[in-house]
Image (cartoon, rainbow, N blue to C red; front, side, top):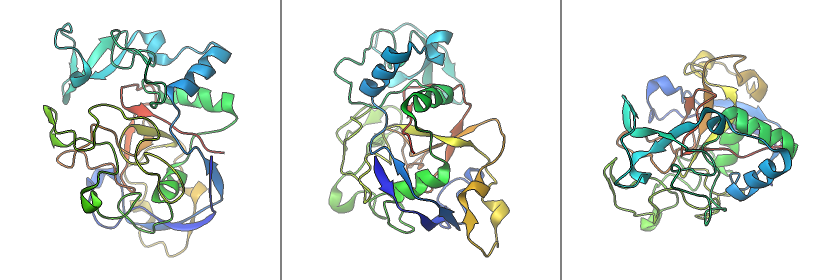
Length: 283
């Protein structure tokens, strides 16, 4: 784990780069006590050790199906139901953390990839076993910034500095053509790409990461004009319908989902599991 120093930082963004409903701004000073965070997202290997030790069964396994990106399915895969607003997501029976792209897939050869097809409750169960917890959004964002105040990405403002890809996202025309500029079509290993200033890998792209708190799109707007530094605990909504996620995934593209920036936010229902949601732990 990496140690993240305590203190205030500018949480959020004033650049208006995300959808207004996401509530990225205005930026506010938030005081976050020091904490430790996993340098990598939880991998298939780590999750397998947890399951072996506890006998835990994930929500997707109990339900019998989960969502898989259509581009990861074989050409001859049977017809499956899609999400109306996002038809590239398919309902696939037999998809779970051991079979992240459907029953024909396996984590063999992908033990160092982030575990996916895990719900918020699954992440909490792992954290409890490991003696850790999920990060709040404030903790996650401070860690992602790597000490760079106000930067757009964990490495700075330029998305592809000197033509070098620093994260795993979609290049080309989504969802039917990926030019593979970053070298990956699907998930990359959890330690792919250079770490940020705090030694953390893949805080942008690859797979969304669950956060501890509920998601409210107007959470930061309620703080507009507040002159004093806000305690991180005061930013956490007490209830809601969606859990916050951070970091973006390998399916993000600026044309529709530029949410792999440090300040970008998203959310899903707590029982959601898919081929691009993972987590990392803090203490």
